[in-house]
Every structure is written in C-alpha cells, then in structure tokens.
Length: 284
Image 1 (spheres, helix red, strand yellow):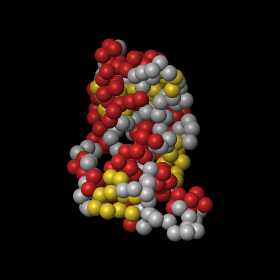
Image 2: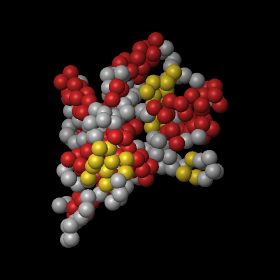
Image 3: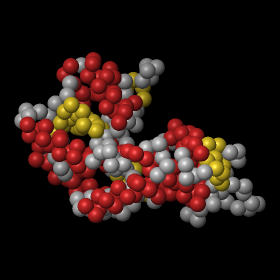
Image 4: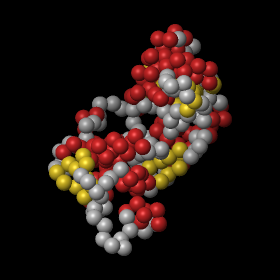
C-alpha cells in the first residue's frame, strides 16, 4: 500500500495513524504544489510548466518559503508513484482528500496520470462527513490534518476504488479547469471546482485590518485563522501587496525584506467614500 496526500501536515497525521493501525503501513507520497491557485495552462509543455514556476517565484519573493521553489517537482513524484506500482503489482495507491479546493484540484491533476492503474487506485474523500474532535464534539473537517489519528483509523473504512467512469470523466474536468485561465479556484460542494477572480480573497484580508498599524504577517495569520474558504498565506500576502500598490491599504516599513518588516493599516476614508470591500461587493 502507498498513500498519496496533497498537504504537508497530512503526512505527519498519517504516520501517527500508522502507529495505531499496522494495516495502514505504507510509503507516503506528497503532491506539494498548491493547484488551487495560479496558472494551469499547458502544464504538459515545458513552457506552461515554467510559466507556473515563474508565477510562484514572484509570489515567494521575500517570503519565509522563498527557497522552496525548485526543491521539488511533482512530476517526479508521480513518476515515483508509478514506479512503485509497477514494481509491486499487488500494491494499491490510496488517495486521501479533504473537502477543499487544494486537495480536489490536486486529485484532478493526478487522475489522468494514473489511468493505467484503474482498479488499484483507491480514494478516501472526507466530503460532508462528521468526525470527533479532541473535545468530543462532532465537526466537519476541511483538511485531512484536522482529523485525529484514531479517527483516521476509522476513516480507512471509507476507502473505495476509483471507478472506470471516474477515470474517464475526471481527467476532462482537469482540462476544463486548466483552460479556464483564472488564478483562483474554490470548491462548491462535491468535487465541483469553480474559478474566481484574483480579488476573491481581498475582502477577507481587509476584514482583518484596523486603523492601527499591524505587522503584515499578523494580518495574514489572523486572516487564515478566521476565513471559511481557505487558501495559502503566500497567496494572501500577494493580494495584500496588490492592495497596497493600489492604494487600498497603507503600509510602512520595508516591503522588500521579510513579511515582518512592514506594517499595514486601513487608509483613512474621506467622507462619502466607499470602503474597498464595499466596492468589491458592489462590483465597483
């Protein structure tokens, strides 16, 4: 058995679950890119792949993750998955998905590359399924990593083979998503991915600004903790810097250094002027 996940925190959780249930033992492969944001056109071509890398390079500049780019290539990860399945004819690949656009878009990207292993690829999708948290309360997890290890042992019962029909239909869904030419994608129930404009998360960032100066990194952290439809901190910082450049947010400090080296606040509003989030919501 091998496991495939789409978020780094999921790896540690699966390892903890393996300590509780030996039947889960197996190598874990992590698809590391965040397919829920950024350009997806022509990724089968070198030019398209490099375009995506350049887009990430711009967002990662001066971030805590600046050196991550180039440290992995998900195409190599897929090659390693295929090699393992070829070398172990009886092995199954278990794909773990949370109810979020990050995992589901990663699933779509992966599906068309594993078609030849139909019957050996299983999926565990935590879609609208209740689990028990540390306080004994029922909740609906957004990500795999939010589930307790002992609950993961129960979740394995949800494993089912990906059907031949899904292997035929889902790769077409990836084509639709990649040709949509947007930088933001969200999950609207089931496995339905919908494209949005770049400014989709702007109001979430604005909500966490005040008239007082705050560290930009703190604003992003607060936004991540409070938003319902989540995305990564790198993308949110990119949008915050866009808002600054567009004079929708005031900034002080050195933005060419780290995220902790500049502060932000809401700009003073002139009488009768709409707030930026009001303009977004009104289409202005």
